[in-house]
Length: 378
Image (cartoon, rainbow, N blue to C red; front, side, top):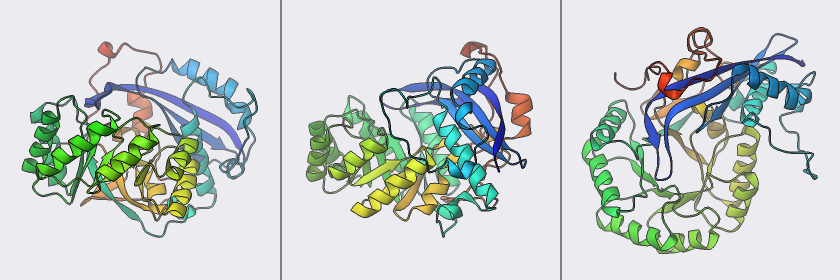
């Protein structure tokens, strides 16, 4: 089985709500889907997303892909590429002009699993078919009313654990949000908070003790301070023995390895490339460090979460991407369930291709109303 063709579809639409944290604010989605096609007719799907800025026109995306990426894929066997290790020397390995990497990785793994007629999570060694999901609001910029409505709905559909954004300059605002959460959902199974590097190590210790003294039991504090401050992270671990430090989201595999070896975190946060997540998962297991699976596009990371024994949690953030695929992953009673079909489980919806494609760049203000989020009340 060899790769013989590709298709790219460009999308641009409004998110169902403004998402973000103490550092960023995002109101629109900019995504291209990549389909790699083999000589046997199999199709592997990947997602190429730009977080902040529109992607260029579809014609330009295709031109850049054909020039920079396609020569390394055309005629190749997918299974021969997914574990390939290349050693950087000078400029021979460099980033592409557009964010193709993760989408290519997803499409190659999709094809590899389909060739073997196996769900990806089974190919990766998974023996269970579901993993616990927590409701993550990406809620920093929401009003109190919208914050409560989001988490009230999450609790009503079976979520028992919740993560909110903190890191406000005034800790009283963070305490207020925690109080709103508990008043809205009742006593949760677990509460996680995410500061997105908004605090210093000393601030974190002070703030976490204030949160504890206010009666909130926090399972983990995510990315409390600067990612490279390993000594600061260790200080937080020592100063807050009543909670876990969860870090590593912003690192590549090299940085995650350094963080683990420095003992700068109680948990390692992974998402992204399938191969990279599995390698870090194996390394974390060697060090006895739990792994959490952060946001992945359309929850494709459930395949890795199920396969890694160190993973107990997967993040779900109620983003309006479901219209892009034929059948998103089922989330029921606080658990996300993997598909049984071969591949990673996601297939580009024909309705998305025909109704939602935006081949040329549009100003965000000129975009039509975004797609309805079917997992939220409307």
